[in-house]
Structures are given as C-alpha cells and as structure tokens.
Picture 1 (cartoon, helix red, strand yellow):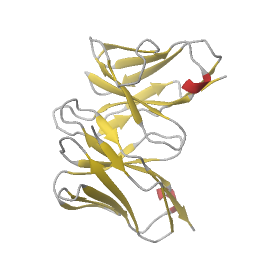
Picture 2 (picture 1 turned 180 degrees about the vertical axis):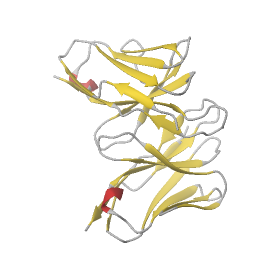
Picture 3 (picture 1 turned 60 degrees about the vertical axis):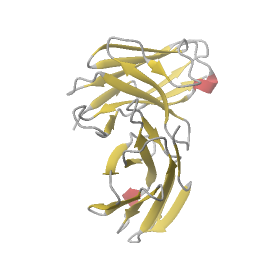
Length: 110
Length: 118
C-alpha cells in the first residue's frame, strides 16, 4: 500500500519562506506530486518530481530524494493567498489511482 | 487544461433520502474518473474509480450498494448516495487526468459537492 505523512499545520508571515515536508512509503514509486487546496475549493496541481532534485516553478519549488523516500514543497515570498492546504501525492502504477498525503494546512499571517 | 464541472455544489437532504452528484468533463473524453471524499480538515480519500461503460472499482471499506456510480458516457459520471445518513455528510469531489496519453498526468478536479444530511 501507499502512505504519505505530512505535518498537519505550518504557520508563517508574509514574505517568508516555508517548507512543507512529505515522507512516503510506497509499493512502487514513479514520482511525487503536490496539490494546493483552498478551503471549500478543488485541489489544483502545483508540481511533479519524477527524479531526485529540485524543480522550480515561480515562487514554488519542489524537491525529491528517492533514496530517503522524502520530498518537500518550498514556498517563497509568501502571500496571504498562499494560505491553504497542501497535499503530496503518489500515483499507484498498477491502478493509476492518485493517493494523497495527510495534508498540511498553511496559515500565512500579515 | 481540462475542465471538470460538478453539480450541485452543495446539497442538504434528509436522512434516508438519496442524492445524485454529477461530474462532467467539458473538454476531455474521460474513460476514467475518480471520486474522492473529504471530511473537514482531513485528506482526500479515494472512494472509487469510475470506468466508462463498465462497473466502478471501489476502495476497501466503501459500500458499493450505498455509493452508486454510473459512467455511461465519456463526459459524465454520477455518484448517488443512497439512503443517506448524517455520517455521509462530507465533501465529495470528482476528477480525471488531464491527458491520458501522458503517464502521471495531473488530475483535474471538479469544484466539489458539500453534502449535509440532516
């Protein structure tokens, strides 16, 4: 089976940098994705790492270390609108199902 | 990117009644759709995989007779919560991949349905 663990909550101030960690245990691994979800809204795709290293997309970056079964999402220059829940996720290679992590609620304060 | 339309966005029903939730893929022919459920402040839990023209595949612990899924066309999947009870109150979200030609293509989600059973 698949399990992905994240811290439940992270807080930061506007303009700061925050890192959201994800550790996973999977039977087969083909990459780690990150999704953002605002309260009451739909999850939206942020990034995907198939290989080790850092992927940068604007203010957001995502890192993966397959040997450590670990990844993180890095958010820079935080804005109030970044307050949301963030989920890491892996795709089950046999069924194509997307399995989500426990989720991290980020609160950005002025 | 793909657009997924989900309806209704919220519904309140009485215990014992049934509720149908529709999920439409507006610009993509989705052979597979995924239905998730999310309780407050929790993660998204996969309920079932909806397959066009065939039976849905349910996750362990999800009652297939209670959560009826129909995927009769490439653009429409429906989830019917039968004989709803207060513990079924939750946020239900459908999704499908953005491009099934690309492995690990991101999922696109509907805006979800907030179900409250009184």
